[in-house]
Length: 218
Length: 222
Image (cartoon, rainbow over all chains, first blue to last red; front, side, top):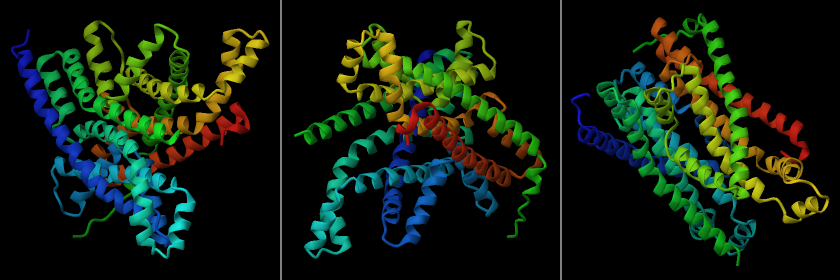
């Protein structure tokens, strides 16, 4: 039996989970802000930002998150910046999140019936006014459920940052597994930690979805 | 500062890159076929409430969808041996992919099955078809056709996700990248090339799946 007690394992894992939570929140908030920019570029009337946003989304959705992190981590040292793993992790996950949220929100904006655009145009609203007063408020309502659902992917995505050396829940688990020779217990607890973070979000997203579908059925 | 990019230092290792690509595709292919079979079993258990499997699959789906693939992989590869289940890195990687895709496709295919109009099943029953015949001939093909685009996306996500299998030393494409950059010290170029390869693989896998869907499921799948 190793001299590391179960309580020590749990205490260390909770410390790792705090970093996972912090990174998830950072990536989700910053990624959401950047995602708004991606959304507006993606639905702009000018084709140039639209194409750029589309390419951005396709690159981030078509390559592994791990590769994105490696490129940021090693690419930044090429331009003379030695960035620490936590910064590379936060930057990588923020970009990843912005691409996905931008695309999810575009779907929500496009789900608004064309008549809403036409009606607001006939009231002589400008494009910005249409967005601000007619389209976005309605799109926001249908965007909440898939956005909460995607936050689960962000939390799970943070596990990959352990590979570039960011010490969050998974990395803490790997180190503890090596130190205690109890990988079954440790990785079981790590999985439980992610489940505790993600399951409430999944369940909440499902509940929101049911609510929207319910009210639409009338 | 003047950094001279040197992509030839990466292309020298094209054999390792091709071998890694092959293994990534193999892992994805085996995982996709077995994962979809598992997902179909889960979907019918859930949609038709086949006790006790519906409950078991419900728990399984929640457990897998709310934990990271990397942790599932570590649990299988490092954790299970202490229960006496020994696996090499490929067996562990394939098992993890199958279990992961099985959970997601259970939910995807279930949505397709639940969208089957009741009249279709009643018509099949009135023709004295057995439950098994109804499922395989009447319910499953249109259900798969309806959700095929979602299945394609999920398989691509899984393929990109296999890049973390390098962490248990399964020698797939990311492992090849790690190996190459440790030899040529050209980390950025190596990861850039490999990222581009993943992108092409994602496009290619999506095309192949779309064509497969058209072939197997008819014109209903787009």
